[in-house]
Structures are given as C-alpha cells and as structure tokens.
Image 1 (spheres, rainbow, N blue to C red):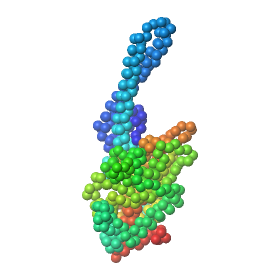
Image 2: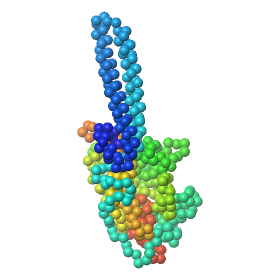
Image 3: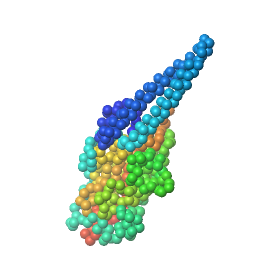
Image 4: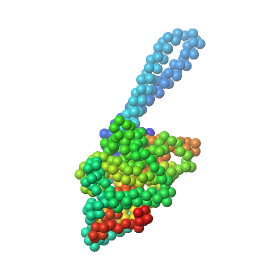
Length: 414
C-alpha cells in the first residue's frame, strides 16, 4: 500500500508520480480533500483535548477556592461529547483514506520510463540469437497436434475454454521443467518451499490482489478462500504480520504451484493454443529483504530467471516496463520475453518486480534493526511460467518433420 503519510507530506510530487501509473485526477483530488478534512478534524480534536485538560485542572482550583463547579461540570461533559464525536469523525475519515489507498498502485521508481502500454517498454538486452530455420516454423498448437502433446478439446470438455490437458512427452516435459527449475533456483541460493494452492482474503490483500482485482480470482463458494493466481501470494504471506531479524535477511524462496486466473478483460486475446490459460504451472522466486538489499536482490533475481532460459537454449530479451504497464504492486519491473519462432515474436515468460515496502505495509512484514521495527522490501518473479516454457521449447526445438528435440539439460529429468 502507498504510504499515506508520504502522500500527505509531499502531495504534489507523489501525485505526479502516481499519474505516471495512470491514477486518475479524480482519485487524487478525493485523496487531497480527505487529507484536508482529516487535518481540520485533528486540529479541532486537539483544541478540544487541550480545553479538556485546562478544565480538568480548574476542578482542583475551584474546590480549593470553594467555587461552584456545576457550570464547569456541564462544560466538561459537553466537551467530552464533542471529543467523542470528533474521534468518530476522524476514525471514519481514516477508514475512507485506507479504502481509497487500498486501490492505488505503487509509486514507480524514478528510473522507470514514462508510458501507458507495452509499446513504450524499453528493451535492455537480448540473449542468444534466434535460430534461422530452413523451413517455415510451426506454431505450438500445430506441433501439439502432430506430437499429441496438448489435448485442447478434452481440456475444454473437462472444464471450459482456456483449459487444456497435457499428454505423452508433453506431460513428462512439464514435470521435468518444474523439477529442473526448482533445482536451478536452489543452486542459486533460493530455499524450496511448498505452500497451499488456496489463500484467504487477508493474504490476497497483503500482496495487492484484493480488493482491486477480485474479478480475476476464482473464489471458493461459502469460504474465505480463493484459488491462488500466483505462488507470490502464499509465499510472501508466510511472513505476514511478523517481525523478522535483520540478520536473517534476505530470505530467498522458490516454489512451484499451479496458478488460477479468470483472465478477466482478455476476451479475444490468445484464444488459440496454450499462451493464456485459466490454469497453468509456474515456478516462482520470492525474496524478503531490507531496504538496502532490495536493489541488488532485484538484479540477482532477473539474472537467475534469464540464466535459466539461457541454460535451456531459449533466445530471450529483457524489457524494462514503463510506468503504465507495470503490475499494481510493483515499483519496478523487468519482463523476460522468450522468442517464439512460430509466432515470429517475443512473448512474456517471466516478470520480476521489486515492490519496495508496498506489500510489506499491507501485510505487516517487518524486521528489527537498531531496536526499531522497519518495513521489509518484498520482491517476486516468475522462474518461469512452465507452460510457456514448454511452448518455447516446442517452437525453438522443432524439426522439419514436426518432431521436437529435447534440451540437453532436461534429458536427465526424463
């Protein structure tokens, strides 16, 4: 969550940064009005409290001088009622501020470029050259049909559109990729954790999916539980409402989970194939760090995901996202886009974000340093989206007859 005290203290500068994220003028104006109303109520409350203290001291003086305290008692009672009313007004204003702030995205880092969409993202680097095929490369759904690896029709029959079933080598490679990714991340110092595939509303609020993105979540009827949209939710919330020791940070974690998303707003996009599914496998990187560690950890996580793609022989590029294309909780994001020769373009396969203290403020993740409790910095990233990695292998390792070679690093896992 954005720091309300920071916004109130430096409203013009922070609001200018939030406009870069697409926060509308109306919401910012509402914030400004609420801050002014809160300041007015606080001033009146402080004045009434000071008056109450003054009148309380008069009781002793009046008794000592033998004065009648009836009028004073009446004024004290009236002022107490006034204080109670002002406290309630202040509570309601703070609730409204909290509710509004809950739907405001993170403040972008200064080096995040301006822009409103993916067209304005900045390419940082390309790794590995795409292969020149002596034939016209097929897309993954064509290869799936030839090899029988992905059964789209039966996936829809079991559930609905945007579900699929993996078969034969497709299913085995999916499992091999999960194991390989976890082992790779462990070799880079990330502890493997296994977490629930459902999370409660408090956890989803902590990482920023609720309340703003409720429409994209699968809710369990009659329960305060949702199917997780990413392992970022349960892994980050392992430390919700905890005070950690500074010397124990950073905590690097990796986890495999299936992910569930309604893909609200994606109608008509990637309707064919397995690019955009309601259920998909993903291996995640999460780190809990101090403020001073988070920049270095961010670069470390980007390198980990990129090196994983390189080890699989998959050409990819690093993209610094513009302010308008970042996720809700992110202060800075680098996407990795893998080359898909069948489509003839790069497609997102990983997204690594530094949320600074945005999620930690919502989830109350703190650490003790110099006898003070400080908000942690949380970072997360895909390493990688497993289904999209399978697609990238199919398209990049395809042969002219439609058969598919297996990357060397996966052969032991098969």
